[in-house]
Image (cartoon, rainbow, N blue to C red; front, side):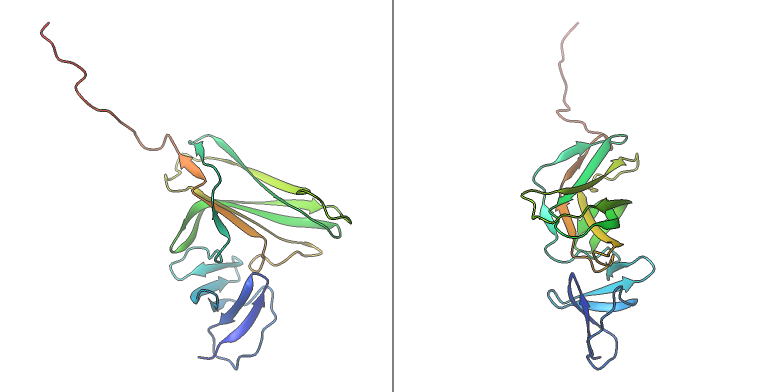
Length: 201
């Protein structure tokens, strides 16, 4: 099987379909199997969901986009968790940018998305490079009663808009934190179990 190159913003992926090695300039790409040449990992692109998946079925997050969390936040069912993204921006005004937020489990089989949400926001025209992030967006999750104790990872991405920043599958604007959450109030916790006293009465 010859590999064809698919040029994506997140990196060069090669198709695992038969072909003569001709570069393919498609965004979004067509459904099928691809290989990330940086890691050699096989991934499947599903044009219906506009996502790449690992062979085990998790959402494929390219190498280097997940980071150790700088802090941990304890949440329990019913709590509200606001996730905010920010970035420095210079360029024309962009309308209808999609913000994508996910809480789940990042592991050896990819990112298992358990909670996801999309937002839409606009970016104003900026002509001078900012000294600090000048664009923000956020989404507030309500933690469900069925949350698992291992749903401790978060990732965000942005894509789309007019003019378009990038396609959903090919966006390079992707960032995540591992071990960002501590899930409380889901499982019973008993510590220091012992006989408190015994005495003749």
